[in-house]
Image 1 (cartoon, rainbow, N blue to C red):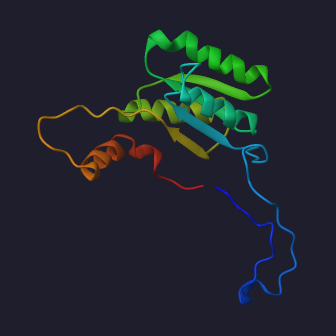
Image 2 (image 1 turned 90 degrees about the vertical axis):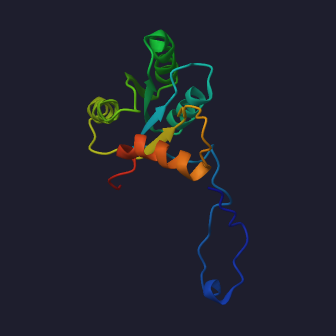
Length: 157
């Protein structure tokens, strides 16, 4: 989100408003204090997912590092350690969100780890679609991915 509100709006709708607005919302001034985030695909300390998780944590969010493979456990723990090293809150949960049970495990583990009743932010960074000999358009592909991750799109806070 980028808000550029340095200048006073000139339309009639805004003509009698006198509030002062911040110039721009940037990563540096975005507060996520009290927010809870899950970032799938964030278990590799040098990956994009880990960088996003760290940025969320630097801005105050409590972050769940999600990974699938046992081979990544130590790397996911390194991401958590790095976040905690700069004062952030993080936990790592191994689960495969392509299954309903894996998605439930991830959400339930996050809720318990941070003692909360909802998730505010979901970063879904990795989704594999197997190649097929038949043509699949992007809408069909998205439908498949959405169905696999549908547990994250329900509810509302």
